[in-house]
Length: 168
Image 1: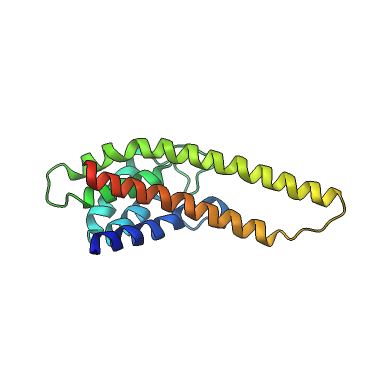
Image 2 (image 1 turned 45 degrees about the vertical axis):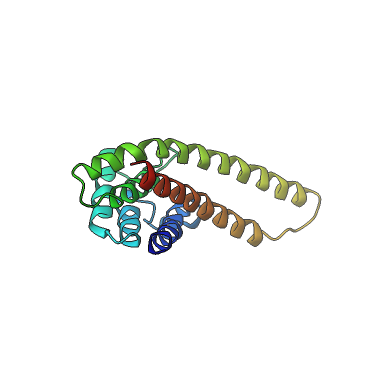
């Protein structure tokens, strides 16, 4: 149905925010950007923007690019937007979406930490091959890192938005 299409589009667009750390500062990981994209995909861009902007105001630092792994505010913005968009006419939809989304920020942080540990192990394997005189191509590793970042963010956003529409 249309709701499932919106969910998949929201997840695909939201996955772009997860690539922020490996593909450069694209600004797509910002809560107001992800919130607007998810809201647009679900047919409520203004609600999505409002939810993302609320997260941006509450949790962002001065820097446009987070210097360390912290609370995944982009994921919170996306999930809050999805949950609020599922209740477009309900008073307090933004607050309910935000409350639902907050734990997803911690989950997103944990998932990113796991992924970065995996990246370190992969780079250790490449370094070991270099020491043995091999010349492995890094292009495959780089593409895999970007794809894994997209998949991590897309999966978490899809789960958060789908469950949020059902729970909230």
